Length: 351
Ligand code: ADP
Ligand code: MG
Image 1 (tube, rainbow, N blue to C red):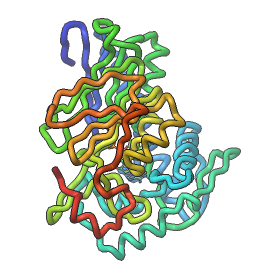
Image 2 (image 1 turned 90 degrees about the horizontal axis):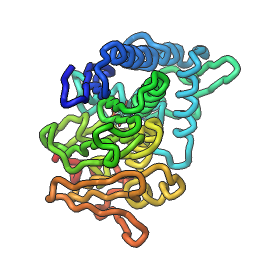
Image 3 (image 1 turned 135 degrees about the vertical axis):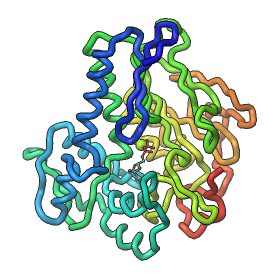
Image 4 (image 1 turned 135 degrees about the horizontal axis):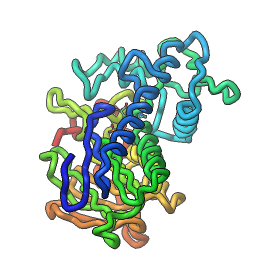
């Protein structure tokens, strides 16, 4: 526990990520409850251990449906719906590919092309059968695996926010390794709101491109610099293209989503990352409560719109562009997320 004026920061490592909780009262018991809550959700949702509710579904792939608890069923239902959207780059059935790439874990290396092809055949979300009456999930093909890595932290951040709210807290921030959810504004900055750093890709961990100020909002960033490895000059990161089986390759280094619900932030970072700047900004026009901040390889920071946050640029080697109606934002590099994996070596660099 650290104190900085009257902010109390509590930290832990959960879900393989550093977790930070900021409160405006010294309340270790409450912080303990928050960390236990996160752990409980991690225990049922993880696929990085042998046993969890999601692993029970995966172990029974091709054999039988598995009944799960209400929150797990609901989350899978949501993740499946997003995966079945037209042209969605989000796929909860991506598990076999995530396991074979092992990005962010020991023993990572570029899998053989044939292996990727074989795993791709096991990643069709259409082969997931849900039965709401029994709250059961059936993976129809043996070898299929659900992976909720792109949605779980957002879901949990919202649960923490709701829990703190129930406890009568009206100023707090929870950061689940890049998934930030907030309650109200800090009492010492009621106008400015929370100051959330936008990290500089592939730089020292405390290097910031800028600061995003929000009140009662979630700020979720997904970037290719978070978990990756380099082999023969090519950067392989952890957001996979569901069609090729290789890391998504486009002009983006990161996408940040500002929204009310962190689950939306988590879903939309993956969806929008796949769409790129133009398509992504267009897509968001139908969602007035959800906004994106793109960071590009050619050093631009581009907002789809800027209604629910303030932004202060700190690194002036980057250009800040707001995508208000008269600014036409374009992906200047050829990549729009639809490139062949062979093109990876040209642009996918770890810098
Ligand atoms: P993080 O916050 O850990 O960076 P993200 O929200 O960016 O996570 O999601 C990345 C994780 O989601 C990967 O580590 C993997 O478990 C899973 N994943 C990778 N590619 C996809 C995809 N196309 N659709 C859904 N989940 C994915
Ligand atoms: Mg995500």
